[in-house]
Image (cartoon, rainbow, N blue to C red; front, top):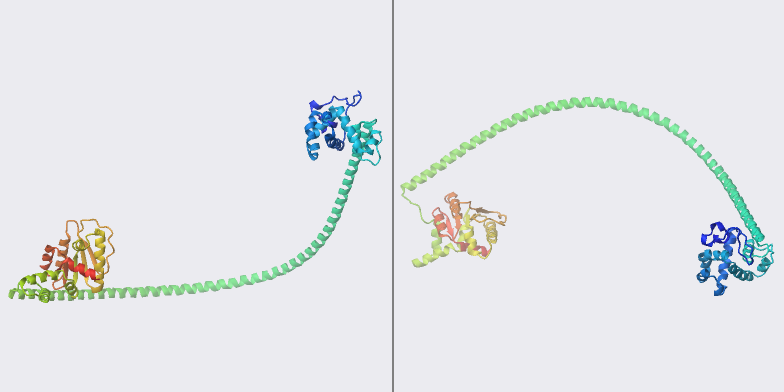
Length: 462
């Protein structure tokens, strides 16, 4: 829109040579410089009247602008409309005629070169620019003066309002300052009163501090006296402790001497008892030699077992002895003897009774069952396994059950014979194994051999 009234701001393709003007005649004069309000009003009037022109009278650049919505036509096509108004006098004449006709009496007055006193100077200047009657430049200048005067009046009024507002704010600030001053005077009076009270409290605190310091000095003197007394008591206590420790050391030495004397006395008694037992043993050996009594193949318990299972005829007696070694009832009778010791050939029993299980499961099954027997009878039980295989998953041994593995180079049979030989003569020792060699070997040392089936049946009952 600046191209309409300010030649210096127009693009080069729309510029009009300075000092030239397009009009209905041949006279060429420079375009006037219009106020911004007048330029905007001319563009709005032209945009509103643009759709009323016939298509053949409308310049080609404005045909697209004429199709815009009314509220967008002046804003988006104002530049093109302004350029055509400057460059095309015929278009300006046609659009001006329509605008002046639509303006009614005001348009007729402007066409006659008269500007009504009550009319808007901007509207008058816009109509004068488009209609260009005689003296139209004077009308535009008068409108510019009126607009500038109105702007100056508005500026002066704004300055007056600003001054009035500043005066009102200053008055308000003075009132607020008076109120604040009153508050500050009241606050100052209160602070002075508080300071007076604080001075009095400070004097009282000083007196209390002096009294507290004096009390602290008396307490320090008393504490020093008590520390000296406590030090003397501590020294006396330490001396008493040293005396008591000396007496305790003497008592401990006497106790140690008494213990050693008691130990020596027990050693003498043990030596006498051993000598007595050894004499009795040698006497029994000499008596056995004098009476020419050889070792017996069977023990009294064996005779009792044979007597309780006796049948007419020798073959039946042989079968009875074979059955006795596998009879769980006989095993119960032997385990009922005082301080009986049950020794079990581990794998000999498990491979006979649990052959379908793994070695780990066999051991676990047997050891668990022997734990139940130990709990019922209270007897000592030892189970022996060959140590050739590597042991996996061995459960904790139950109470009363001893689990042994033969060392490398030693079999379980040899370990069982060693256990039997280690027992004192006369103690009931029961060995469970179906190995004939093991049974014969332990029988020679006074043990009771039992077959594996007897223990398996006993375990199946529990």
